[in-house]
Image (cartoon, rainbow, N blue to C red; front, side, top):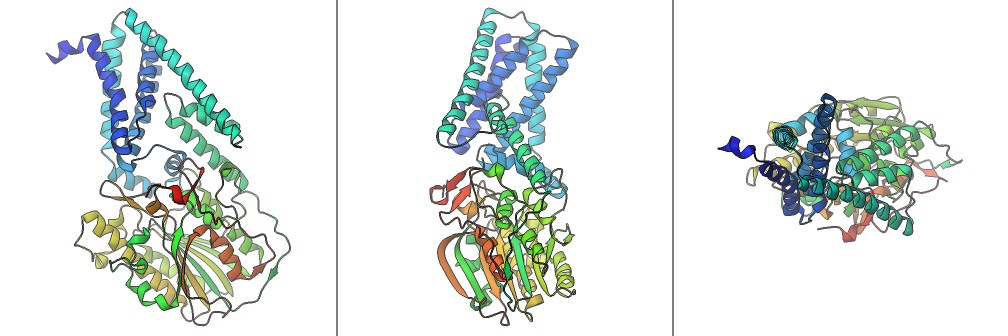
Length: 516
């Protein structure tokens, strides 16, 4: 019965129509945004391929095109179902710059999408080979083909109109930008984001080969030996006890509250690690001209130029990925670099101990944690499996925050007897979507913990405790570190007092207008 049904051309069209419409409907269900072009793009490309005369070469070409189409639509399904957002340049950057450990974790967590991709391709290709291409093309087919070609023409025109409209508001489109926009309006719309992401990485790699020339500046002599910047990972501010959470997730920080200077309303410049950390370290502030941003001018190269401050990058995240990230190119400028890649951030503590006992007199040390990076349950040892009263994903996340609090406490104890500061700041926050803490371009996705511990022997001009209750961008870290190092006479970083955040498309948006 089923095989007879498959012999009907009309049923083949129904199959293809379903495969085109389902991703669109799922996207609408999760984001409340109806993207009709997703369905039309699938249909258009399918019917264009179906109109090609069958030869061995065109059959191979068809397999390639339908494979890419499948990958395109499964990516759209993933971002819609899991992230509840559209595919963007930021997500493409994360895919390109993920290391082996992150890739393995992601594959384990989202393994279901692999069979979905195979099933999607099989149905699409079966419909093409066994049904549509076997029958003589009827007049309705050529009507559909004509509509398809007209649709492509409309999409190209629409891309052109968007580029022209952006010119009117001051955005100067580069060749890369134009190509990415045309690809974005093509049937394989994810190619636009991938192409733009590769262009950013290309520019970043070339720019970071040069060391900036700094103007003559002076160094104020201050009683401070160690500046330790702890870069937290995926920490939702509301999950910290220090920020008035009812959860006992930061007992150590809470005990030391009288020694802390706490930014109660700190906002990350991005919801993604790659761009957020790069903007923390760089002299550049968030800008619509992100593609022209020169990350070679950063706090590490500035510290190196003093010939007094020795720089360290201690990371519990893998050093290499297929492509260098924006911030790893900055990290490579550190004079001392050590990487571990273990589940637990305690692996960094011996490295810190070695660093603070070397022959250097002044040290700027960055410690990049795994923190609460997914899967959170893998980020803490059994002794920190404390929370059990909430949903499993919440318990795991809160346990990871608790463990990070312990790590920061051990860092403080390591330098407690020296004139030092320890700055803890998270790269970005997290939001709860589909019963999991996840990256999200929402207010919670960029609300982060940011506080400073001061040792009692620190220079009194630098010592400060209390709370700053104003909304602050964490991009001020650059200026803060120049003050601690005593650098005077360099151009300060733009303060981003208007609190703009980079969207997933790498454009500016006021924090106040972001989704709650």
